[in-house]
Amino acid sequence: MTRRTFESTEAPLAPSKGLSRRSLMAGGLVLAAGTLAGCQTYEQVVGLPDQPPLPDEEFDYASAYAALPDGDFTWPAINYKAFDEKYLRQVVEYKTREKPGTIIVDPYNNFLYWVLPGGRALRYGIGVGRAGFAWSGEALVRVKRPHPIWRPPREMIARKPSLERYWEKGFPPGLRNPLGARAMDLWQGSVDTLYRIHGTNRPSSIGKSVSSGCIRMWQQDVIDLFDRVPLRTKVVVLTKDEDIST
Image 1: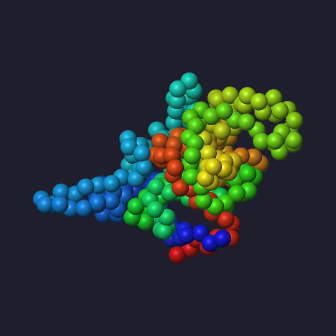
Image 2: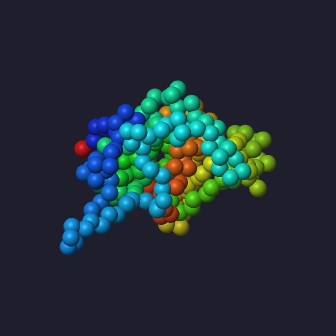
Image 3: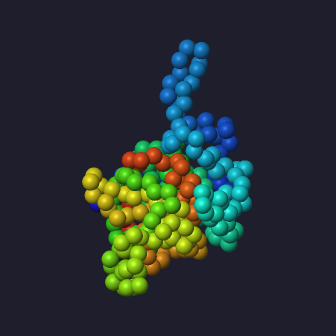
């Protein structure tokens, strides 16, 4: 299946170089919707209102990945300096025919892109479990769950019968929960694909293929994405042999 997605050679704009106010306007992060008498310009911004600022050249990664209080929990700090900086939350050049606001998941290169106007995207590093390679295609975010309950799939219970106790009521929210701080469930029409974008209690798994789960993100990153995307956001999951070059 050929996807309508094309990626240019990426030039990260953060953490080393980012978007100044001038480049935001020139580069198209903010879309000019029209100019009326008196040169007044109306702007359209992608995503939910009151979302966090995008990473730029002055972005404070120490604060972004610090311990994060979140209701009854505090998610641990991420030792982000121990990771390749390509996996840090950052704005990159990314050309695609998909509309701004679309999520594009590349499980084979461990990246998730949230498409921005002007040939750019907000990119996050991800970890990919076995289930993350089991499905590809297009879907919508139909359910967004803060502090989700985790219910292990039957095939996982078959491999590890001790998980049976979590089948009925699920694994409660908290620091040990495999879905982490947030989960976004992908549906095709009335069918749950069982594909999830979620947090992880194993931060070292970002940038890697792991044994279980779908698409996992650092807790701080999945909360950041959760606060940007509305329900019914389109999600495109790429296949391994998909040609995404321009």
